[in-house]
Image (tube, rainbow, N blue to C red):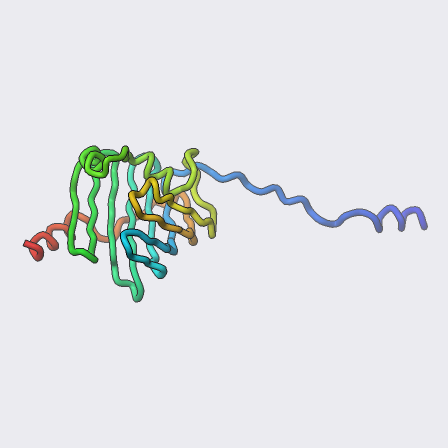
Length: 173
């Protein structure tokens, strides 16, 4: 009986937990907390939402304090649509034209690699922080913290970016 007591009292009762490896994704939706600086400006209280279809589309919405939209962008394999509400400007150009204007190679896979902080196409994990490097962003650096990450849930895009651009075009000119 003493031998039985000694043998069972030394046994570990902890279960081994094997972490699940990150999975590849087709659809990704995540909320973001963003700190950005560049061109003499600093933003510490930005938030946003990232919606992405792997190798097909990136949709980004950035808001400032009290839910005021600052930026909305949609990037596909061949085009860039961007509404900058701070400067009241918009951009709708082929991706290679934007790349030539920036003087750096720009592609959808590169953008997805920067936003995901990996080149394996793996989604971010909950509370992961990604640092966008200044030398890649032309003077802009940003720190993005992901939360509420949802994988492979088909998503909708709230307002069509082209409709917003048409309304903005009427106001600007």
